[in-house]
Image (cartoon, rainbow, N blue to C red; front, side, top):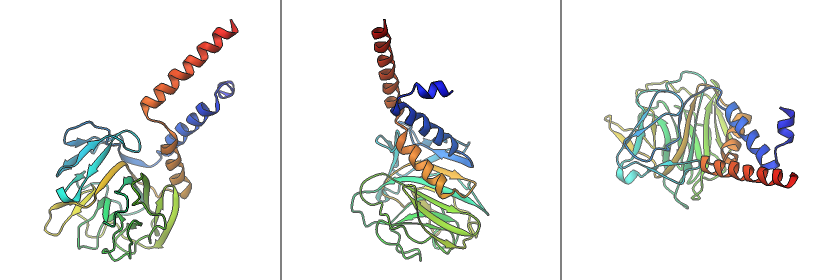
Length: 268
């Protein structure tokens, strides 16, 4: 193994380390949605057995943080719903990569298991000033049936991809943006009166209808049955940023193979 590492260039070594970090970050992972489909009404789980169903005009698009993404618009009531799953009465975490229109002052819930107007469930919120958590445009927080995590100082409404992670360790609720801890508050009860489905970009409205609750794109949604530490969140962020797309990786390997062939020819 040592000789193999010595033979790697800096770029290849960085890639190998990133791939190792990505594998290690899977501890506690119970569901993952990459949204790499090219069409159809189903978002297939790449981890776990619970697929999602697209609603409204939700559509798979290219240009995700890795591979494809899901494009959502509240105006056409878009969402992806995974049914009444991912109920937690103790520690857990949810993660989503989001891209909102630059300068957006709109509110959004990229991930939720929440029944609107009922103090129940959980959701990741961006720019939400109406849920009792004192949100502000572009800031993120994690709602967990009160109190909320507090708001992020990092804004995510700049038209770029951002990682947003909410964690609950049984005692406090925390929010992270781009691998960095932002805020936390003690308390929270994710199980209270919650019969809503787990949704990407939507929530259950009064009366039971499922409605769109996010405008932008969402990618790499993950659910964990543990409270991720700050180090783990940072490691996941670094692994996603560092690991190239499969086609880029293939190109890199081809290039490394060509360099190896040239080196062998020179030695001859």
